[in-house]
Length: 119
Image (cartoon, rainbow, N blue to C red; front, side, top):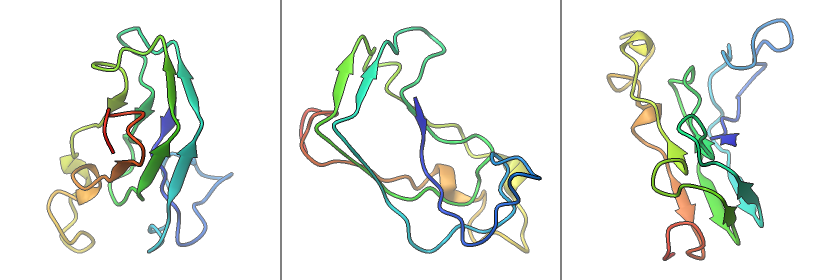
């Protein structure tokens, strides 16, 4: 599966720091486009085709999907998983909305209906 993208506005700290815990704010712009990707065999309870990153509380950039194919994917339970916002990200000096809004404001656009059934 894939994680939703987060484009960093500066050095994330990698490789000295974990790439899953970036030490830079997100960039203002960013876009992920998936075209002609095949997701296969996401049919067990712990398998997820598309997910947010649990340790990201700031921003997820838009994702556009087209010409997607799914084989052996439980579309109801294993296509997408979004974690709940974490109270641990709340910092009144550093966060505009409470709790930080990355988990609440995610845009995934199905351009041709191959994922959600209609564009």
